[in-house]
Length: 415
Image (cartoon, rainbow, N blue to C red; front, side, top):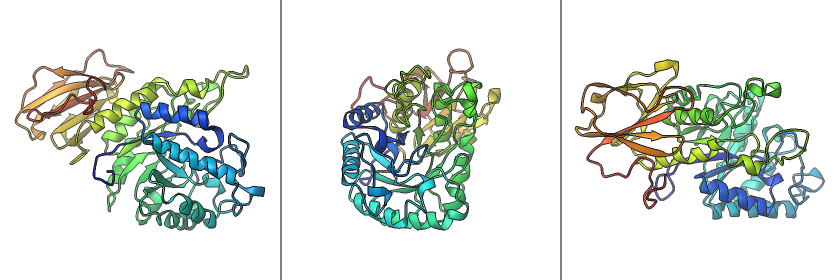
């Protein structure tokens, strides 16, 4: 995905689903400024949020979205605040991936007329991405979602995508529809080591080729598999990074992060539970480390970028998949546990090569002194292999005068 002026752009999303219900202006300023400083570019939010909420739920100021719950009678106070939130996001260079309603509301409370109304309200905003669906099984509702997609597609300046149910992908039902411009999957929160990169492979094998990404992965600090009392533990920063790098290096156009305490802006501190407040969770390690992925991807040209498993002579040492990505003049290889990397350097078409180790936990790089120009070679990442010792190997054309991987122009010394 590129901006309208042709410049490279990377989707780094955050699921702030309950933004329009929970945040007042002061908290929204803190949320937007924090996520922007962490490198995020997209906030996914639902105007009419349906998860454990009433159709006509109030916002932070006590204003319901509609008078008497009637979608033909919008409440000016609610929608003025919604306008402010979207504009304030724009002030922080953030796009709003906007779900006009949670999927369970479409068809009854949320009508096609409502979809047309909200599309017309925001079609002139330049930081809107329309998101159809909303965590709902398509099934018998496919015609309705197609009609909604056609409504959102009338905003010709905005991307349109579809947020599917857990374990599903938009490509399975809508890839051939012209309104769908960006595929989205939801790998969800069911287990560790889920291979969401395989769905990326499947999406990119369909013609016509459309960009794809994981729009709802395992949330940091979420109970694995929704188990009571988190008996299987919670997803940690390593889980978050592993899924992010696997899918992006499989060719995804970006990635969406989520945190179990941030998506609903949970206010902690009571005696009934031990959940942390969202203003604490927003700075958890996985969120901070997403910036390093975005900076790495933006530090090299997007042109020619494609999956490159063929440069690996062995792609699953230690039993966990390594993923390789190539662009014009460089290659990235990710190992989630620091296992050896077996590469065929003859697959890299540069006579002079240089290499780096990129640390996804810290955003730091270290040069590899010398590497051969040809033949098979084994790269041994720093430290002992194991959980929380993931690394990216960067090999590039030595004739290119680029800064270190992950270092952006104009930001010397900053990852």
